[in-house]
Length: 100
Image (cartoon, rainbow, N blue to C red; front, top):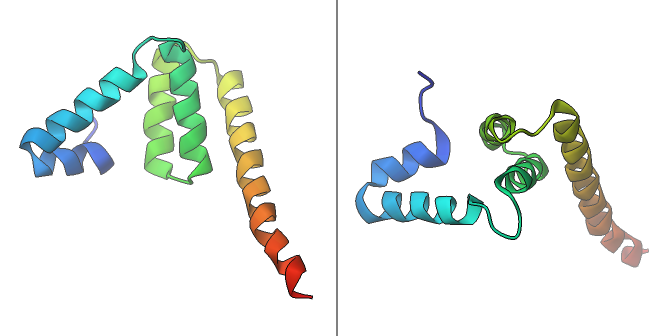
């Protein structure tokens, strides 16, 4: 059995209402709606890559695979996330042009 880490372990340590509320919120957000669970899991994975959270990336990859996301879809989503991250870096660097 995999040891719980990160956000889940933290909210469980807090216990009570916080843990329950976090898990309920996650469940509500990630259930099928206008977007399928598969699509949402792929978005979550891409977001995890973009914010550079290794633990999040591992957790969301595992969940994405459970929902039927393919390795190719994971790689493309990660590439898009990397592109967004790179673009945000360029946008931040753009401010340097004003300092000439």
